[in-house]
Image 1 (cartoon, rainbow, N blue to C red):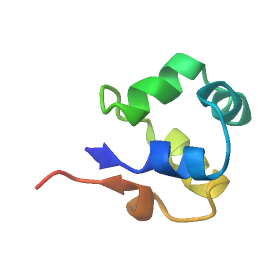
Image 2: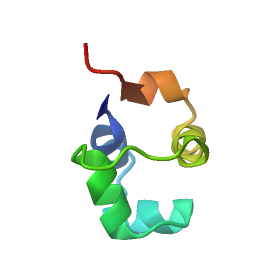
Image 3: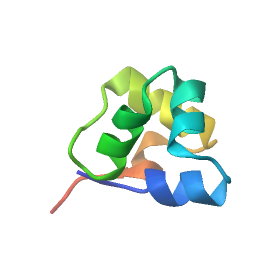
Length: 64
């Protein structure tokens, strides 16, 4: 699954550590999501979408 987390995080001026703190996850978790090595749980995906004031579908994209 692809995602736009890194682009949205950078546009918001946040470090991985800062975003992790806001989401109550580690910096390593944010990095793993951004690089596509980890697909977040549904509650975490919703929290990410809410943080960036958008929908889960706008951030996460299923690979064709």
